[in-house]
Length: 377
Image (spheres, helix red, strand yellow):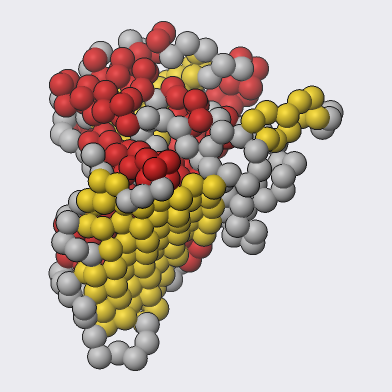
């Protein structure tokens, strides 16, 4: 890489586009040693909405064809729907352009494998956007586990609950179509939990060997609304509203995971717990500056506020006790990814990591279809 700013191309301008654009804008203020970036091109289909988003997000150019942008940028952020993850990402890597791709890596394990293989063959920096790895409290938890503070890891529990689809008249969206999304709550939310569990305990318990799984769809079709709020049609929902799974790790440790998009009263409730022979810990995204830690000999959990300057990333923000939020995880992620790009090295979570999660997602789907425990192939 040269000393010139990295020209960034971003595919997608809605929810994730806004989150990552905000992160890119914050980098020079809070991470001054981060590579300098130029928000070069924003890519989408709706020209009017795209132009409006580019103005707000600070992008100099827009494009409705991602292929036209590949040769213009130094880095591609692929934030589009799951079914457009593989082709643009592979094309970018083959053109020598590093890629950060949103999770899940692809709708199918076959496409995820192709993306992993492209990254390996080209040697170009490629990352899967599992942003929760970059929460300071999660980094602190990982350090405790790696230092043996919990002893031998026996159990992992993870749940991710949301309620945006409780109402059966909630509008149909691409996330409800198997061709575009691959799966529902399983891939949308479960991918985060499975990756986070591996990040925390994978070094102590190994890989997931076998899984059971149950996927449930509670609402089989949902309405499409016009601009006046009138229903124009109903479309089939071909993915799960909720899933549950039990897993066995190589070490013999067990895991229990679940996610739902119809859990009334839960907005973004991502909780992970780890239990060992000498202690336990609990983390909740809804209290992301805190970590609950039970140490051997204690009668209850201690609430640790992870906001000290010695905690990961915290020294870049505010004085101790001045908490950070969800959006900061994307800043940390972009800092680490773009630093890896500038230095020409690998980044974690990689496409390989994204593929490993995809294998588990596929196994849970197979277990549901067969009604039995299956191996992660």
